[in-house]
Length: 187
Image: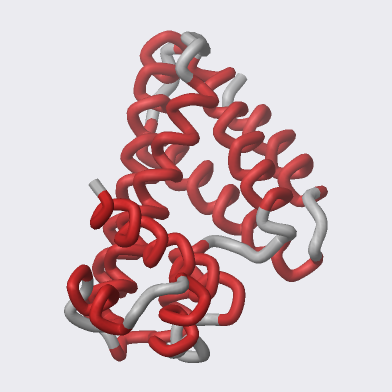
């Protein structure tokens, strides 16, 4: 049990540092110091900084989908669920003080220098798109609309664009504009 606590603390500290100051700007010694552990404790749990990066991304992905599920679990109407997704992404931006998407940030920082991390981030975005597609399919079946793939792609791109725009502008009005656009897509 104690090992889990140390492991979780290491992931939490590394996650905060990777997100706030960047992966490349975060050193192992800083993680060790801020987690209050010995170097051996770190290497008992993670074979490398890259291994720790993977744990960070897995944690963030789990928290993202868990947060969405808890936000929408009581919503049965598919249109309302899509609008709740927008509100969820808006809330994530607010709580991060407009720091942006964990996955976009890491890919922009490391580029193709770490193909496994790039692939994980791409897979995460695909999972988000599949989640949107499942909701859109439910909606289009009810509303008797065609081309759920195009609607899914539009919603996904609008949401991602709103995240980037709100990060740059450090405000959330792009989500409000985007929500109106999506309501127009979903009569």
